[in-house]
Image (cartoon, rainbow, N blue to C red; front, side, top):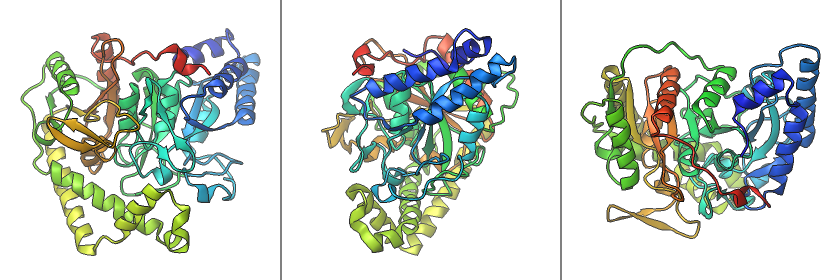
Length: 447
């Protein structure tokens, strides 16, 4: 298992390890990994150039940055200078190469991080499973017969397998939080607008955020700051509650029990219910489909068969949404946001499931939760999608699980701009033995 990002950076800055050696080892391990189907391109030339710059600064007695020599990967919708940004779509395979890095990628590299790979995703980021008709399905690092989640599944799988300590994803309706939960790692959806989306292929601009996956809250906090996130001081006791109603229903008993343990440890008060949550989830579907469908409408008219069939059908359905339905969805989104903001005015932290269940099998179309049959794919975002409408920061943290159990995560939800509170709470939950990344079997990271 790879060291944490901060451990690697400390060694590289002290001259105990070379960034080049770390990069070569990482590239070789990803190349030898024949199961996950998580990386779409190994960026060996980029990585070695980045690493050699870091080593040159260290050799000259300088400081290469807080992420010196730390390997990272990016979902294939972040621009990388000289590379084509596919957004998981075959029809973009021959698009012109990007002329520069996405802003958050540039900031990571400027802080000494070493870019090693692009990662698999649902086409155009429209999905919760990373099943891609063109590039294949990304498999869960804990069980290759199960989904990694999506749409940022390739990034989550690489981090979950311990092949890279950091990876970038995007989150529109849960595309960071869902795979973080299923792969047993930390994943942050920052406050809407906190990090630049410049150079990131858009999906639904009113909801799109970018963020990072990591195996420790501390690594995640440093990466977030490097990319432009602000961490405000945190003080005083926390006012905590679990979300009830929609968020307590249709969830595996394992995650509900985990939330109860966290709530007890944090001295939580009575559960809070958001009355518009169910309607907000439907509103998220409508708004996502409508904006995504219209974004791709010209391409659908030109050559609909070039799309992944699952993506194509959802985009067409979205483009056909009547204006009245979109306006109603916008009103629901405003009402739900007001409800959540009111809850966060009297609570510092709210708790909810990140996914309703652990990772489904790839061959499963439905799953059973509390006696109800759910879609094994569409309903992975059951508890993330409504919260996306409000633009608040949310951290998915992995529950401590018995050996051999599949991972599942909990969402820590705070008011806008309070990412520091999320990181501090996650670190405290690690210290209390309630939250931890699940070890991955050694055969999952070997050829």
